[in-house]
Image (cartoon, rainbow, N blue to C red):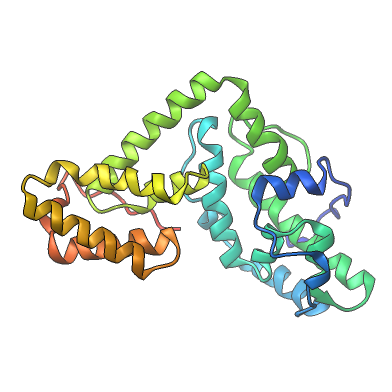
Length: 266
């Protein structure tokens, strides 16, 4: 597999403003002045190239995407895998290029190189995983700004009715999997679409409402809900604890289904 050092250097220019980027993803850690250099640029660039040389890009594919309406969910899950795989991946995905580069110490050339390496890795992974999809644009250098600020919004806006129908069909199928204990696909689907924690809880509670046939079961469900919500800070951890508790105390609430569903690991 080609490494980042052997490929064409990505362009530095951006198709969308940094403000648009920040508004879209709202994960910036704070003002750029507060960023402290924590990585050696030269060492990180070599490490990124090493990881890319050994990486099996297909392992970063969260699921086989069939409809372009599901790209936002796919991309959210892809990001989680990418951030865990590449050094400084989290900083890359949560900051525009100018602020990302402030995490590195070294010469201007070495800092520019590490930024180019990461952008090249992103391009190669996106190209490998999506270039054969009929809905995906060809023959271009894929950047985060293009995917996040232009392409994904264009899919949502192209046919809002069809988008909503496709999303609801997808959510219904994922809720069925969640009823069997495979909750991550539904959780990531909801997080990818920026559903609020309260509405995420409503979605998961609705799955188990048919099981609450007595006042005692309603009270026990409420207690498990209260424990999960109060014990963990993030919605991901809350839902995880919720399912752990259900598996321990009310395993019969989980539907068996027609067969074991392949787990969705991200």
